[in-house]
Every structure is written in structure tokens, then in C-alpha cells.
Image 1 (cartoon, rainbow, N blue to C red):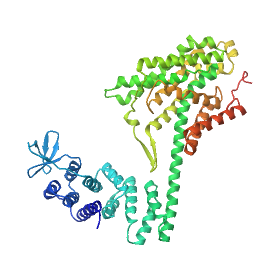
Image 2 (image 1 turned 180 degrees about the vertical axis):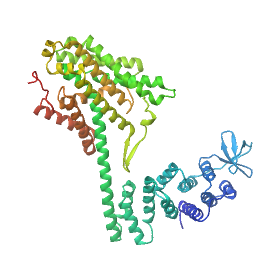
Image 3 (image 1 turned 45 degrees about the vertical axis):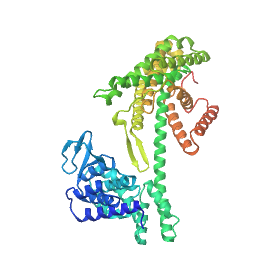
Image 4 (image 1 turned 90 degrees about the vertical axis):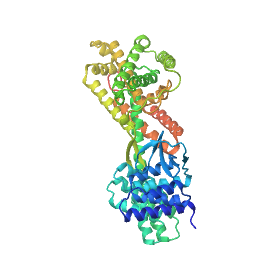
Amino acid sequence: MLSGARTAAVVISSAAVFLILAVPALALDQAAVEKLAFGEGDERIAAIGALVAEGDPKAGAVLKAFAEGEMQTSGKRVLIVRGDKAVDPFTGSEGPLPAEREDVVANNRLRAAVADALAVLNLLSPERGARLASAGALAGGADPALYPLIAKALASERDVEIRGLLEVTAAGMQLKADSRDERLAAIRTLGRSSNPSSKTLLLELASDADPDIRREARMSLEAVEKRLAWGEWLGLAFAGISLGSILLLAALGLAITYGLMGVINMAHGELIMIGAYTTYVVQNLFRGSAHFDWYLAAAVPAAFMVSGLVGMALERSVIRWLYGRPLETLLATWGLSLILIQTVRTLFGAQNVQVENPSFMSGGIQVLSNVVLPWSRIYIVLFVAAVLISMWLLLSKTRLGLFIRGVTQNRAMASCVGVPTARVDTWAFGLGSGIAGLAGCALSQLGNVGPELGQGYIVDSFLVVVFGGVGQLAGTVYAALVLGFANKLLESWSGAVLAKIAVLVFIIVFIQRRPQGLFALRGRVAD
């Protein structure tokens, strides 16, 4: 004897397969709907199978309403309740709710049967989204009695992604076939898949009693594991690029200020935080408008300007009086960071605030079955690349860039030839602070924004700058990418905490051996 759930699946599957494959779509069966509402046990299961076999789109709506508790009866009438209206399931006409009515209750067994039935019904839908959802639901495991329908859908399916899911589903069904040849063919099919569920199915057969099936299963399992390993390495590489781009954006402004003026700016993290809160304010200004998805177009320049102006104010009021005194500068900027944190707490509160992603940054690209690249990370990598190119053009092609490079290499000589070094210091500090604001704008798209946001990036920013070489833009880029990859690679082996410790130890040892960093600063003063 089969269990209740097994009996339900067999009844539904048999009815669906026989009628969908044998006869054209019919009108909604009134007798099946009445059995669903008034019947008992297996009668209701049979009614679900009959409705699936009809192929009528209204059958899906009826089954969904039944599973969600929206079906009621009044005498011999069957009603679908929509708010304060009663909808006739056969004609779709609406009317007032009768005074006396009873709920049609669906237990867990019936709801599971409806889920399978809807998946079967949607397999032949003209809508790609419906077929994809159905194939995904069946890929988790389907009754072997559904195989003829899966095979029919697979024969007519042209979409690569849906075909892949259906092939895995069909092969998984055939693993339990009576024919040994069919089981071997199914194992080989799974061996050509890169779906993680294929690995699970093959693991169960790796210790099969039949030596041929066991050998074929192990060979297919090895092939699947190799493909999944490539996916894992691809995901790890993208994670390293993503983390490296964030570290680069956070450290890029610090590379300018620290490289130009030798100022250990402990308030750099708070300038990142100011950029993030500026993005939050701009988002609130756009909220409720039809152009909300474009708020980043205003938030990016706003974050740059606000953080840049705050940085210039700090340089003019405090930092310029402390040049050449690194300890006093460090303590002063640390105090400024505490002031900025408390100011933000006073204005926005101590709790984190949420910055929503625009709709085009939601979701991701599934490049492999086990690798999804989030759009938010992809856009941030592209944004960092754009900022880096802009910085290179500014430093190499503009008059301000020429002055900054001259002051960085030899401040005294630049002053002698007429470069206004004090003004260059202010503009350079504002530029570095503005880039920190851009980092805050980017970080706001990855998580919540809070007063302590910048504290998590100040140490990593200094590590990137020192490792790459003080005052070297190319060194900052290489250092950020190297540290990003190293962090993610070590995290996959030993966890986040040990990875952080290992990277820090490596930086300490490296700086002891090569104090100038990856790229030494060139110039007469450096020499």
C-alpha cells in the first residue's frame, strides 16, 4: 500500500499525464470543482488531478484560491472570495457575498498536491516566467509518474535555462526506473549538468550495489564537481574584485592626502560616512517621485561636494597648522572624527538608516548554476573604474594635477617656481575628501548606513596606501586588488577573522622588508 501523499501524487500525475497528452484542453469541469469543495479525502485529490488535466487557465486560479483559503460554499454553490465580493469560478462574474457560507479547508496534504498540480499545469504555459518557476519547483524532486509530461515539455522547450532544469528533473526521475540502461543514461545526463542538485542525486548512487551504476555515478560525480569548482572559483574571483574595488575607493582619497601632505587623517572614515548620509538625504528627497530610480545621479555629485567641502574646512581650520607634526595631526584628526560622529548622531540619531537600491541594481546575473553576480556589486565595480579613470585624467592632464604631482615630488622646488602650495594643499585635501564621499555613496548601496560606518574602513584604507606605496596611484590600485583577493581567498579556507589576521601579519612583514611599498615614490626628495 502506498502512503497518502504517494497516492495523491500518483492520482494527480496519472490524470495529468493521461489527459494532457491525450486530449485537447476542455472547459472548467464543474463536477471536479464541486468534488474539490464538497468531497472527502481521495475524491478531492482526484478532483485536483482532473482540474490539472483540463488545461484551462481558470483551473490554476481555482486551485490557487483553494490552497490559499479563498474558496467557500453557500448551499450547493462554490464561491471564490475576493474581498467583499463572491466570484463564480466558472463564469468569473462577481456578486455580493451570501449571508450563510462555509470555508473550504485545505490540509497540508491537499496544499502539497495543489503545489505539484500547479507546477504541472504551468510547464506548458506560453509564458517563460511561469515555465521557469514550474521547472525550478519540480527540479527539487518530482514523482516519477510525471515523467511523460516532463519529457513532452522538454521536447518542445527551446529556452536553455529551462531545458537544463527539465533535463535534471527528467534524469532524476529515471534514476528510479526499472531498466538498468535507462538508469545509466540518466546518470550520464546528470554528469553533463552543472546543477548542484545533480551532485546530490549522484552522491546517493555512488555506493549503489550495481558495480556499473556505481562506477558511472562516481565518474559523473567527478565531472559535476569539477564544473561546480570552476563556478566557485569564478564567484571567489568576483568577490575579490568587488572587495578590492571597495577598498580602492575607500583608500583612493587617502592616497592623495597622505601622499601629498603626509597627513595621517584619522577622520577619513568619517568623510566616507558623510558621503553615505548625503546619499541617504538625497534619497529621501526623491522618495515618492516618479524618478526615484535616478536619485543616484544627484547623490553622487552631492556626496562628492559635501564631503569635499567638509574636508577643505577641516584642512583650513585645523590641519594646516599642524604640518610636519605627525603625532599632533593624528591626535587632532582623531578628535575631529569623534566630533563628526557625534554630530551625525545628533542630526540623524544613533540607529542605522536604510538606503534603498534603485530597481536596476536589484537581482543579479546567473552566469553558472552556482554563481550569481549581484547587479549592485557589478555597478559598484564599474563606478570605481570610472572614478579611477577620472582621477588619472585629472592628475595627468590638468593644471591642478600637474601642481599636485609637483608638490608631491618636491614641495620646496614647486614653491620656488611659483606653485601656490598652500592652495594646492587645500584643493588636494578637498579632492581626497570628495573621493571618500563617493566611497560612502557606493557603500550605502551594500548595507545600512550608521555613524560608525567609516570606522570599519579606516585601517584597511591605510593598509592599502602603505602597501601600495605612499603617493602612488598605480600602487593603490594593485594593493587594493591584491588585498581584496587575499582576503576572500583566505576567508574561503580559514574564516573571516583568521583571514584578517593573516593579511595584517603579511603587511607588517612586507613593510619591514620593503618600507617604500610596492611602488617607490620617484623624485629628488625621495631619492
